[in-house]
Length: 103
Image 1: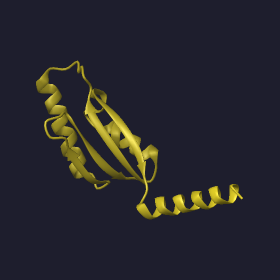
Image 2: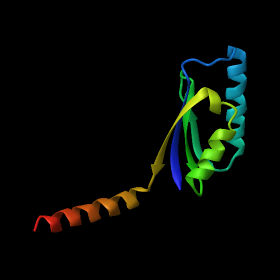
Image 3: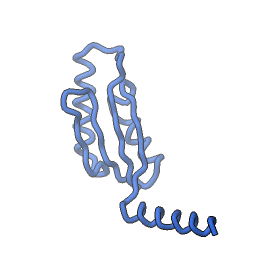
């Protein structure tokens, strides 16, 4: 299962700036070593980033997120993804059902 994970540092972090930066560095290093993130990017000029993560379940994704050093100082948004072919199939099925209901 693919998920888009967006992360932003909380507006107020109860840590000294040096410690917050150390957590960010440790988290990025951990993400780079893990094969499950298929793509990961940092936002230019902002304290956050995104990743596309390939996992077996939402439980596995949660385990990855909670293991990150910055997990307690960040807000996460998670979006399940599907391929364009999967989306197209669903749209066509929805259109078919809509047309049948209008008969």
